[in-house]
Length: 465
Image 1: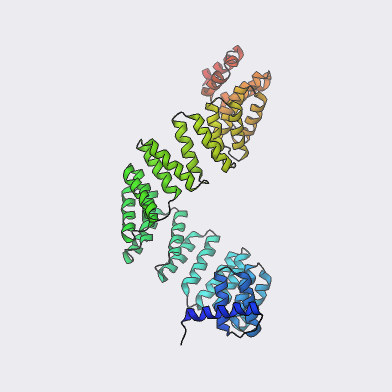
Image 2: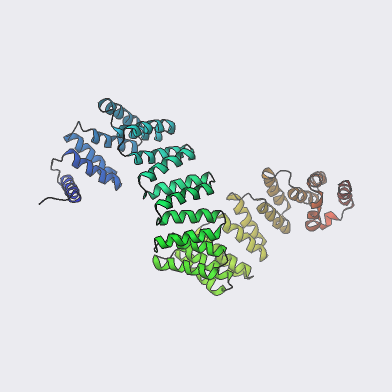
C-alpha cells in the first residue's frame, strides 16, 4: 500500500524519534531528513532540529540542503561567523542556489546591515522560482530601513503572486498608514477589490481607512460588505460598532458588539464599548454592569478600571471611585493614568497628603505634563509645604521654561518664605511672559497680592501693556 506524502512524513518522524529513544542507528534519505528538520523548525523544536541536522550530515555529508539547514540554525543561535564561513563554502559548490543568497541576507540582517541584505535578496530574485517569498523578505528589510515606499512595492508584488497572502496585504496597509497615504490606500484596495470582490479583509481595511478620514457613512458601507463576504468576521462587527458610535447610533452599535459575543468568546473591548454606549443612552445601571464585565474579562485592561472610576467620579461618588482606583493600582501600580485619578479623587475628598502622593508617583513614572506639576504644587501650597512646592516647580521649569503659571507660583511661594528678592524676580518673569496671568497670585496668595509693592509692580506692567 502506497503512503500519502503526509503519512510518509509522519512515518519518518516516528522512526526518527524512536531512533533517538533507543540509540539505534536507522537510515533516512536526505529528503526525509529535510522534512524532519523542517517540521522541527516550524514547531520551534530547535534541539531536535539540531540533532536531525547532525545525524543527517553524518549520513549525507555532501548534502547542500542539509548544510543550509545547519546555516539556518547557526544564524538562529547568533553564530554568524560560523554561518558566514559555511555559506562561503556552499557558494563555491553551488553559486546558483537561491537559498545561499537568502541565508547570506539573513546574516547581514542579523548584523543590522540591511542594505547588504537587500543586495543579496536581489541576487536571489534573479534565480528564484518563488519570487513572492523573496519579495516578502525584501519588504521586511526595507521596513528595517524605514524605506516604506520600497517595502510597499515589495509586498504588493507578494500579493500579486498570491491574492490570499493577507500578511502581505496588512504590511501594505502598514506602509500606507505610516506614509499617511489614506486616499492612495483606498485607491489601491479598490483596485484589489475589483479582482476580489468578496475579500472580507480588503473591505475591512477600506473601512478602517474611511474611519480614519472621518468618512463614517463610507466606512459603514465597507464594513457591511466585509460582513456580507464573511458573516463570521468578528473584526468587521467591532469596527462597524465603532462607526455606529461615531454616528450616534448607540443601540445599533450595541447590537453589533453583541454579535461578536455570540460568534466567539467575549472580549473586554466589546464589553467596554457596550458600556460606553449605554452610558451615552443614560442606561447607567447597564453601563456599570458592562464595565464590571470588562475588568472581569481582562483585569489588566486599564480602560475598564478607568471607565468604572470615571463613572462614579461623574456621579460624585468619590469614595466608590477611590475604591475602584485602589483595586486598579493593586493590579498595576506602574500605571500613570491610575495615579493621576487617585490624586484627583483624593483631592476632591480633601485627602491632600494622598493627593500629593498620587501626583508625585505620576511624575516619578514619567508623567511630565504641565498640569501634573501645577496640580501637585497647588496641593502642596494647601498643605503649607512651600519648600517642597518650590522643588516641584523647579523640576517643572526644566521641562517648561518661561511658563507664566510656574513663575507666578514661584513668586508667591518665595514671598511666603520671606525671600523677597527671589519673589520679585519670578514675579517680573511672570509679568514679562503674560501680564494677564497675575490673577494666579490673587487666587493662591491673597495676602501677597494685597502688598503695596506687589500691586505697584503688577499695575506698572498692566499700564505698559
